[in-house]
Amino acid sequence: MVKATSFAWILAVTTATACAAPRGPEPQAASPAAPAEAGAPTASTAPLPSNAPKASEAPHLAADELHRSAIVVDTHNDVTQRLALEDADLSRPFPDAQTDIPRMQAGGLDAEFLSVWVPPELYPGEKAYGYSVAQFNAIDRMVARSPGVAVLARSAAEVRRAAAANKIAFLIGVEGAHGLGDQPDERLIARLREFFARGARYMTLTWSNSNRLGGSSGDAGKTRGLTPFGARVVKVMNELGMIVDISHVSDATFFDAVKLSTKPVLASHSSSRAICDHPRNMTDDMLRAVRDNGGAVCVNFGQDFLDQSWHQRWAVVQKSLGAEIGKLAKEHAGDPKAVELAFWPKYRALAAQLPRVPASRVVDHIAHIASVAGVDHVCLGSDFDGIPLGPAGLDDVSTFPFITAELLRRGFGSDDIRKILGENVLRVLAANESEP
Image (cartoon, rainbow, N blue to C red; front, side):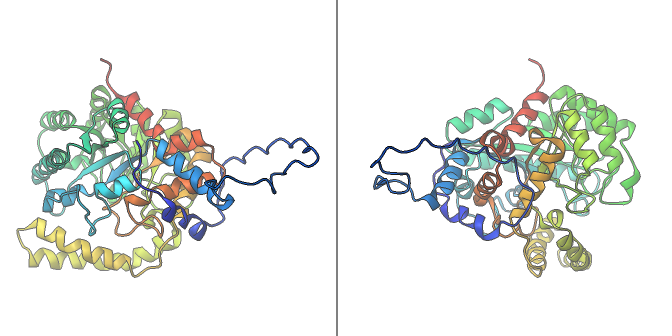
């Protein structure tokens, strides 16, 4: 995809926010130059063409070119809530969100997985299915509203065709099987097939709440693994060509699912637990298990998952959220949409009380995962519009070029950077696609 903007202002952040951190492979030293002939201008004295970049600009230009030529894929974005709640028009600037099409184009983002997620407290039981369907409908409206710049993609090949046509490919991921509703097993399997037919290409087995498929990392189900019904769902997903997403699940559910799945899995928005000890993040043993399965772990940009100090401070600060949600539920009784819309500004304001984590911490996680699992098994899952604030320098979808510049600065090669930016996800997506 040909990106429409210069990334100089974003790339300048690299030197401002980068800190000492794990680096990629050291670049090879250049061969010694042959001695110059007498009187010939040396590299330091030879005149430069008037349009030649200054030496200080060269790294930025290299990162810009690499980013513009790569296919950049983000595996998790929650702006779908705004589409469903407000019928937001992403074809125009949407400054109250972290995502819109103009900023996606500015950030060189070629493909975005939109999350279909249901707040279980607001849509319990069978109500969850209705709200899931409303989000699928909202995605369809958004894509139809932007025919010249956006498509709904269902395969890796369709993502590549969209990028070649200078269009953004939107894909769909279902975040939590509770979104299927509360019906007998056979009916839920039918709904899983329905969601796949409508474009869903991954499903996270659980959200922060445990469900009939297995235990979650976010509640008392932390010790629970995959249930017999969960095992059946994994097999159906493999048959359909729907990626098994193992973000959010308990450690036991994770290992059960990875062992059972015959196709590569994806952690759509998880980071490294070795750097930040959050139950949502992946331990090194989990990273190796994903590697052995052929899958990939997509780093979450949420500060809560990036930095141990921020995670600990946020755990204290966010204790007030439960009471706040209860208060809003009373004020907007019977109107879950109003509760959601009123909650998000308060959520962002609460996070703004804490110092921001530098954007370079995202690349710390990428580098660690690459060192443990291999560069073929790491990718990007921003969680934009699901996180209250991104790290400083990765504020919204326009800032993805920072990652390319920082990876290049740390010595990662161009081919490896292309894998991290999107090729690893496309490989996993293609490997899950059903045989014709």
